Image 1 (cartoon, one colour):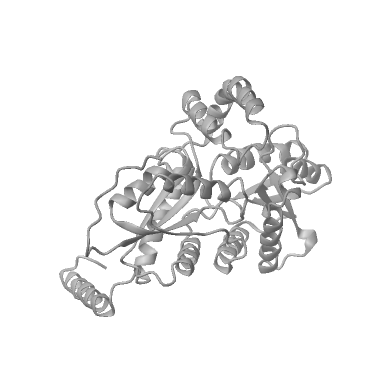
Image 2: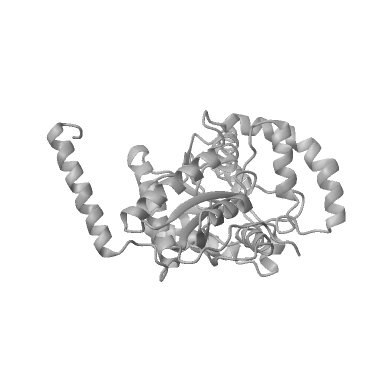
Length: 369
């Protein structure tokens, strides 16, 4: 086995700690060639598609990638922002704000980076960079509140595969899930309540989670159960009765049976049944992306309105909501217990006094409000 080159071990140096926020990934551009590369990497993961490798190689390379890349590129173009992919923009902003929030809570000997399981910045490249910078304690924080083997499990695979080729492996901690974390649920509830204060309440709240093949549930994956727990706890915080909300699963792919009820079929049935207004939230996504901005906010809206529905509202993901960043910081803190991420008290007090003195001078000079 060959090992990656790494910096020489230096005695007496202070090891650093890093949090790596990992999301699914995104193409580099809304073009067919970029989407083709992304889809090939994503759909080649045996965690994502669990069928015969030889059969799937043929289907992926001769059917899926050639015919789907162009269609997907057009969809990405519809939601692409001036700064790039919404998923990448949002995840990067979350990491930056998480770093600032943790620093405010005293964790000043800490780095926060973001990475993608597929696409750029790749998880291996980020882990390599952190090692070069002296990080010997790594907390891997998936952007998925609910655990699934196809998402969080795949991140674990990538981490372990990377460190198989590293001689001096850092201390590792991995977050599995936070589907029932109070801070996460409170942030979700607050986002819904804020929307309702401005727009009134719907006839029905639809909680749409990303779908998975039904066989994953039968084989022991806890994702289905964790989605239901999130929905139940969120409904309780919003004081909703079972008749006032529905849990659904979106993004079905292929002809096999997936977790039900399907989001598109539910929106269709609600409209045909006389429901005038629905609000849709996607609690399983912490950053807006193609599946929320195009599949739900555009396609889902079209389905509902075309069948007689009158009003469709999509409630945005948590993205950089301060309440969510605070919750993310709590989750990270809980998993870093015992790691030396804070400056000694004397240094923290010295920095605090210096900052207060600098602000006092700035106030006298009129430089700040």
